[in-house]
Amino acid sequence: MKTFVVLAIVWFLYSLTACSSGDAGTTNGELQMGSSATYELTPDCLDYDMDGPSCAAFKATNVQRIANGLPAFSYCKTCTAMAEEQSKDMNDRGYFDHNRPDGETFAQRAARFGLSKGAGENIAWGKLGDEVVVLWMNSPGHRANILNPNFKSMGVGTYNLYTSQVFYVGTDK
Image (cartoon, rainbow, N blue to C red; front, side, top):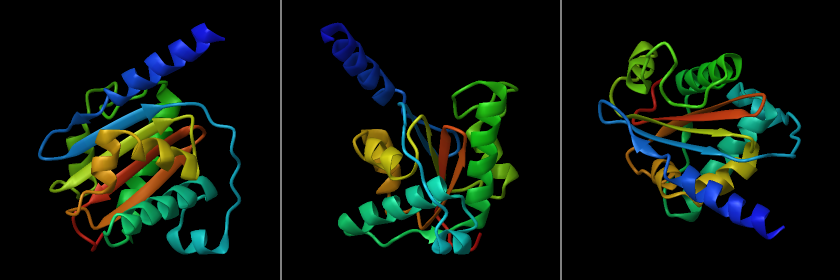
């Protein structure tokens, strides 16, 4: 049991160091952990065009913003589409990174979605919904993205056990 706990702590600390700065003024964060939660699709999630886990992460992120004296994020449909695409791509191609195996970087993806200036991303594997937000808030790089006062809107995409969060400085997407 001691060995498992030590390995879990070492792995968690390693995960926290995986946060990095992206290209073109973007910020990125990533985290891996396991999840056992299930989420129902609530009526308000339909307004956001998100599945249950994505909507739960969106709402939990806004709770953290408000608790830290920041305004809640606006829903960003473009950010959600980009986040959904990234989560599905990581699942389908079996990788865990902001940059894709074919070489497409986060900055290039953001530009492809029309978010070339002032975008950021958090990714996670294993935890879903509000659970992943708890982990992100305990990680300096992820927390910095969530509490960045320059980001005004956000979208979340979940595919199987992958969750991506995309942030944007504008609110018109």
